[in-house]
Length: 202
Image (cartoon, rainbow, N blue to C red; front, top):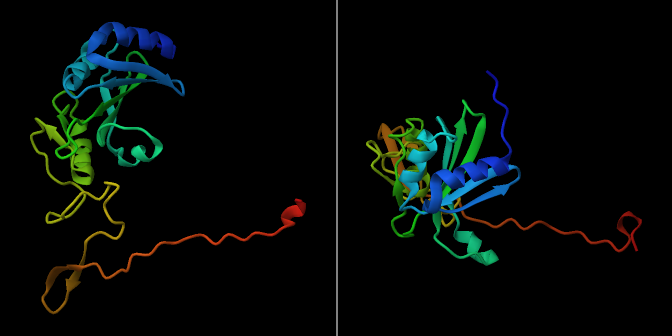
């Protein structure tokens, strides 16, 4: 039996009824429904999105950490770190985006949804590795992309582009060694050429 995608407005109504006052807002942008939820209600909301009739989001297709620190430059205040999750219902042919902010900038923490969708496992480990977001209840939360001895979280916006250390194999010592970065940081400023009559203007 073929299911046609429902209108975003109808999905918004369905989610509002299923989730009630556990969500902060349910909005539509670019034809997609986004649910904003507090960290306190995140796990409960995700369980409902998976199991409730009319929701049935069987698949977690993406989970990513976000560093909102530069949003302050455009006048948006709030917690620095968050998590964005994309869910898919194959049976009902619908999608939803869930956004949750970590209340504490010093220890960004939200519940793990790995017990609900095992596809969250490596996504949560990646967000932990690259952003330092801790997923409470994850049974194997360790780095997944950086080296075991790596210090810091390279996707944080205050992490230097060149990093702090560089790694190389030393033939004399016959092992990998770490050294301070030898690359001098530089800022590349584009050169602007101004011509009074460029392209026949003026």
